[in-house]
Length: 237
Image 1 (cartoon, helix red, strand yellow):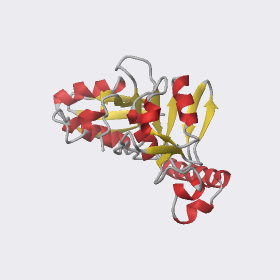
Image 2 (tube, helix red, strand yellow):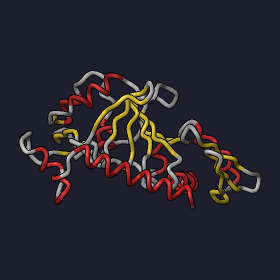
Image 3 (cartoon, rainbow, N blue to C red):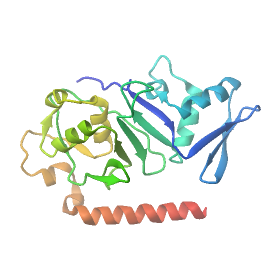
């Protein structure tokens, strides 16, 4: 098994979020007319916090990394608890966004499961792509985040996963964005690993217990209604 790398994944503030570092070390977050303190940090951290406007490498927030930034990790996890971050996949820090992962639930945090070239992946039957304004997004009622697709080649690759495919064959497709995207899709249950190579019985192969009995439209309505109720409750708090 090969460990999935995260060198092209970065984390940054949502477009509606700003940070206000104070000379005392306190950092305050502002969004949609609301604000609250995130805690008191070192002077150096109040300077580094500004980097979140552009993005910091996700790998630097993993404890196993020798460049682990403990204070940045603490700040970012506090922002993530409130869904105030987004996660970017790109070929370079200042290049075009290939994919932007937008949390849809509080405390979403991306995980990168291990994948090997021999693993066979397929889209979830609950996954769908749609136009949002002038953007193309991939989402699922089972996912804690949606994927904003910035490159048509990636949209074509995702569509090709309607049929089970091995990771090594996806590598050969034009515009392959990196294995990190596949890992994030699995983490969000937008795609899943097949236990075998047959594409028969995919409805039941994907899930366990009663979820196999759900139709797409029923689960979508049920999930959206629950999230709307949760957001309304949070606004009243």
